[in-house]
Structure formats: C-alpha cells, structure tokens
Image 1 (cartoon, helix red, strand yellow):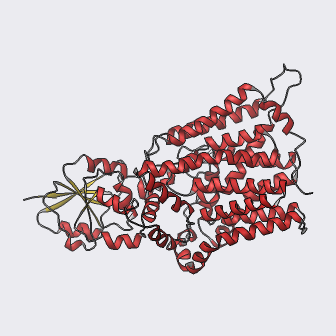
Image 2 (cartoon, rainbow, N blue to C red):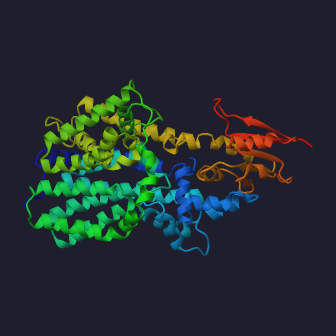
Image 3 (cartoon, rainbow, N blue to C red):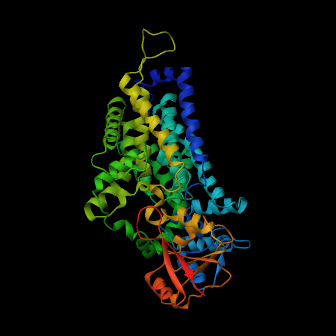
Length: 539
C-alpha cells in the first residue's frame, strides 16, 4: 500500500524535544505574536487601488460602469460616494455582484461572495472587511499544522511550520488585505492536508472531502489549478502510475472538483477575451533583472524592511542559501513520498509562472502573491530543517537537549527578523504591496485636504480606483467633483478651499486660462510630480 509510513528517522527525536516545556512556550509565543501583528493597526495602512476594486465589485459595480455614473456629476460628498460604491447597498441583490464578477473572470468568486455577506452583517468600512481577512488567516494555522502532521507525524515540525507561517511578514501583510490571498493560503493548506489524509485513510468519504476541498480552492483563486496539478502528479508518482484503488479514488475526487468548479469555469471560458485582456499587464516586461526579484520575493517571506531588488544585499543570499539547504536536507532525511509532495507543491506553481517569463517575457514571477503555493512548500521545508537540527544530547539531564550553535543562531535570527519586519511595517501606511505608484502620496494628500476649510477635491483621474483609494482617507463632509469634460468645470462658491487631485494637463491648462484662477502645486517630500494642486481664486 503506497501510503506515507511513519517517519523513523527524526520524528521520534523531535517528538521528545516537543515535551520540553520552554520550547513549547517559545513556539507558542511566536504564534501569539504572529496573531497579534495580524490584528495590530489593521486599518492603518492605505486602502489601496486593488482593495477598492474588491469593495466596488461586492457593491455590484464594475469600474467602467461606475465611471460612467460618477464622472460629470456636479459634486458628491465623500460619505455619499463611499456608501454608494464601496459598500453593499440596502436593497441591492447579490445578482449585481455576480454580474460585476463575471467581468473579471481572472478572479475566482468565493472571497467576494464571502466578503459581501460579511459586510452586510458588519458594515464598518475598512476595519470590518480587513478583519475578515485576518480571521481567515488564523484558520491557516490549524491547516498548516494538519498538513505537516500528515507529512511527518511530528508535533515539533508541525508547530515549527505554524510558527514560521505566523511570523512571516509576507503572510502578515496579506492577512490585512481586503483581497483573497489569506483565504487562498488557507484553502491551499486545507486541500493539501485533505489529500494526504485521504491517501492515508483511503476511504470514499475521505476522498469526497478532498474533492470538495480542492473545488473550494479553485473557487478562491485560479492558480489553485497548479496546486491541483501538483496533487495529481504526486498521487501518480507515489502510486507508480498504477490504476489501483487509491489512484482511481484520487481521479474520481479530481473529477468531482472539476464538476463543482464547472459553473465558474464556464464563465471563464465564455469571458476568455476579458480574462486575457484583464491580465495582459503581466505579459509586459519589467525593468530590472528578473532573478533579483526572485531573490527579493523569497527574502520577503522571512525579512521585509521594504527593501528593493539588489545584487549585493547579503540578506537575500543568506535566505536563498537557507532555502536551498532546507530542501537538500529534506530530500536527504526523508522518503520520496515526503519530499516529493513538498517539491511538487513548490515546483509546479514555480515553473508555471517562471517558465512563461523566461521563454516569452513578462513579469508574472516577479509578483510575489502569485507564488503562494511555492512559498508554503518552502516554509514547510525550512520548518523541517530547524525542527530536526535540534539534536538530543544523551549526556544531558532528562528533558534537556543540545542545539548546535549555528542552527540555534540561525533560527533565532529568523524569528527576530520576522518580529522586526512586522513591527516596522505595522507603523507605515504604505508598503511595497500597496503599489507606490498608486498609493505613496495619499496619506499626505488626505491630511492636507482634511485640515482645510470646507474643501472640495476636483479630479479627472482615471481609472476610478485612484479616487476610491483616496476617499477612504478623507473626512465624510469633503466635497468631490469628478470631471469628464475639463472645459465645463464649475467650482461652487460654498467651498472655501479647492484642490486638484492628480489632474490631467488638459484640466490644469483649462483652469489656468481662467482670469481669476491660479494653480499652486503642493509637494510632499521628494520633488516628484505633484499629486495635489491648490486652486487659488481671486475676486
């Protein structure tokens, strides 16, 4: 029977170490701090462009549809604008949301349906919708424990993996995003654990559970298809491509997954032109050396002080070396049925996003969030390395152990790096995952507008997501006027202070040509192109 047998080599030693009281407390402390950082300053960071698209879709609008409705209207208040386009409206139906989602088939619908239901129950803006992501991210902890237990039957390795996941700055950042990535992380871990559980038990009910879990992952993110492929390859290789009961059961479970996913798959096929068009940007080349982005993305799993790609940053190479060492150690110390699962989880998704970039050009592999399955596999590998480099000292007193200094220092450094990264980024409103080109000046812009007397914000900036992001930082009584035809711009006299936000050259020129108006740029920090201009009126 081709199932994962108990691990005879390091598991027994690590299990005995797990009974060491202080080690339990240390790992539980790491776990607690990881949970704490997920809740800390949950609404502090900018609600950026992509998050506003989440809110727009669950409100039942596509961006082009909303733009047709809002540009050209004389003015709104910020409170009215947010209520209409960022929260589910009273009396609206979920059918409107599904129509909007169908225009973006590249995003599987499960998270959006869940977020809409959540926001109808707890309509408290940014705090509420991000809280949903945080709570979902906590479910990843038991799922990670279950998966690693199914692989190694070791409580120490399992808790080490959960701790690494908990304190990872990458996972903490995306746990506070109003997007599908914390749900995707949880779904990957749950479906993977369900597969190993079904292989071990090999009963119809367990395979049914795996089929449903895998379908759920597909409904969360389309790249779950790569995880499904890795699962299928794993079973085929583990069973040596024989059509036995386990292989047939897995095949039936995968067919069930596809049958359950068929309704949304039909939408994807029917809207394939939109799918290709909406994702065309990932095929565009990115400035810089692609392997340096791979190193950067790997380092962000463990250490993230907002550093950029670099060929000389020693931290990137140290963490890459640690990752390689953990994979080599995993392959040497475990059976192919163990390391094969981890390598396939990492490798299939990795090849799927790196291969097209290398062969055809593009930026897929430089986008950190696309590689979540690969990162989870790597974190499991690192957890196995650390847990099993703690070696029992037979000459020590019972309940104590010897930990080689190199691995002790490395583990402590990794935990400290995670703590430091989470503590630093928690106090910054804009971080790399918020897209500096779309968000970096919004906190300063909003502060300037909010402290002004009876302010009005005028803009002709498109797409609408730029405006939506700013509105979440503005006071509710601030006026907003979105211009479709700059020559028809009218400034109501009841507003005392008037600003232009990311105005086009056409809008600026039209206003400057008026006799009683001058424009004054407002800069923040570096002397880049101003995001904000003040309109000075003379009588």
